[in-house]
Length: 240
Image (cartoon, rainbow, N blue to C red; front, side, top):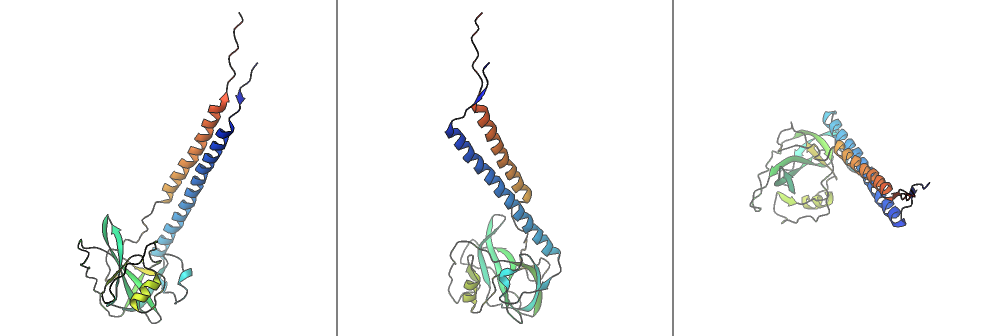
C-alpha cells in the first residue's frame, strides 16, 4: 500500500522560510509599534491630568520625559517669535507659533498653538502678544524633527519662518540660547491659538490589527506550502 509523500523542492522550502520570516518580523514590528503608541498616549494623558512641576533647569532637558506637565513664570519676548512652517490642520497649511518666555533662570520656547497661513506667502499672520509678566502652564515636548534644512529668512524680519529648526538654529536667530524642548501651552491658558496637542497617531489597537494580519499571512503561507507539496499516492490499476 502506497503512502502519501511530503517531498517539497528545496527552492519552495527556502522561499517559504524567507517569506514566512518576513511576515513574522513584520508582525513583531507592529507589536512593538503598538507598545510605543500605548506608552506615548499614556504619557500624554498622565501629563494632562498631572500636577504641573517647575520648568527644568538649563542643561538637563535631554533626559526629560515627554508630555510632563510644567509651569513657568516670565515675560514673552514679543519682538522675536518663530513661525514653525508647514504645519497642517484639517488639510490646511499653517504655522505653529513659538514665543520665547524669559524666566528668572533661562528662556523657554512656548508653543502658543496653530493658525492658518495666508495663500499669499509674503503675508505673515498677526501673532502679537503682551509682554507683561505671566505664569504659563503646558506640556513638555521635543521640537519637531525632520531631515530637512532650515529655511533662512532675512535677519531683520520678525516673526521668522523656520522649517523644522533645531534649538541651535533658533538660538542663532534669537541671539541667545534656548533649551532643546518646547512647552505646549495648555488649552485654558490665555493668549493661545488653536491647541489640539493630543498626538495624531495610529492607535495601539490599529497596530495590533496589522500584527494579526501579518501573523495570519505567515500561517496561511505554511498551510499552502504543506498543501501543495503533500502528494497522494497514485491510484493502483484495477486487475479485475
